[in-house]
Image (cartoon, rainbow, N blue to C red; front, side, top):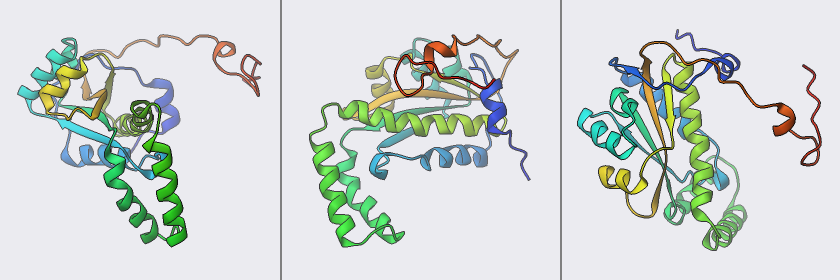
Length: 216
């Protein structure tokens, strides 16, 4: 049985990886990483994320050029390109409702209410790109943690030219490119802990600016 690392340990010890060894990821592990992300929660359960799994070396080289020439894009055996489909909810809503009913979540009244609420909300959403980004980042981060739990190293990236990535991978205009995740095995030494700013600056209680009292 696989010995997965506990999340509490990963949160403390994980570092972004900048250089990867030429060691492949097993097909089984890659599928487990992807499945973990696909089980992430999303608003209305609409799952607007779309993931492009890039393993081909020539594709990774092209992607590197679109990602500010970051070497880890080419070095890592797998790069997952996380995208958000701004129009996908229109096509997927009926299937999401069907799945909900299949799993006993609600009947016809529930389906009608969900259809009405989703259409009203997303049909006139003031920033649908932001909406899909929120959903997609939950799923992409879940993949990152699962990869780490399975013993791999990860390098998350937001430094890339979206239009160039879109051209390399043939991504439609209505699909936003949000995040690149390199996965593989660390080459060399892991980065040092960079530190965190005071919790008094970032965590508040009840109202913004009011200190939260940590026990330890």
